[in-house]
Image (tube, rainbow, N blue to C red):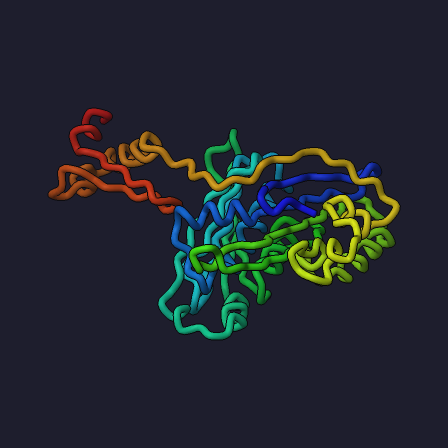
Length: 307
C-alpha cells in the first residue's frame, strides 16, 4: 500500500494512450502544513480534500507553473486555498467564519459547499497574466466541485476518487491520517465501451482508504495474510487488461515559497503609484505571508532607495 510516512504524486498512462492517471498520497505533507498555518479543526477534512485535489490537478496540467484553488462558501468557509506546482511543492491557507465553531454535524459544511464558489487560477512560466475560472458549486463535496470545474471550464473528461481519514495525534490534536486521491483522464478518441468499463469499476470502490486497508486494524488484508494493495493494483482493478506505465513521481512537500525580495518588489510597485498613501505616518511596513508564519519588515528608506 502507499507508504503512510511519505507524501508523493505519481503520474501514469496506459500503453495504448487511452487514459492518463494521477495518484496523490498527502497525509504527512498536510500535517507539515498545519504545523505552519492555522487550520480550524472543523475545516481540516475539507482542507485535506482541497490539498489532494489541487495536487491532482498540478499533476494533470504538467505545463503550468502552478495552479491555485480557492473555495468560499456562504456561511462557514471564508477562504480555503491551496496552491500546487507539478514539482510536488504546495502551500495553503484556511480562513473560516465564526459560525463554523458552532457546527456539530460535519454534513452542514457539506451542505454549505453546495452554495459555494470555486476560483481556479493557472500560472504559466512564459505568460505574465494567469488564466482564471470561476465555478458556482452544484456539489456537496470538494472533490465533486473540482471535477465540476474540469467538466465545465476545461471540457476534460475525468473520473476522480478520494479517501480521507483523520486521527488524533500524540498531542490530542486532530491531524491527517490517510489522504489519497486518484484522477483518471480519458484521452481523445477513447471508445465509449472503455469509458464504461473504467467508470463501472471505479464506482465499485467506496473509498481509497478502505481499498488500501489498514495494517494496524484487525480484519484487514495484512491481518488476514493477504498481500497489501499498491497503486498499480488499484489501476489494474479499475481497468483489467490495460498496461499502466508510470511516467513521473515527485515527493509532495509543504514549502512556502515566499521571500523578502519578492514582497519588496510588490511594495515598490505600489510605492510608484503613491508612496505617501502606502506608508502614511509610518516609517516601516510589516508584511505577513498569507500562506505561512513568515513576517517581513520594509523601512520606507529602503523602498525609496529602490525607487
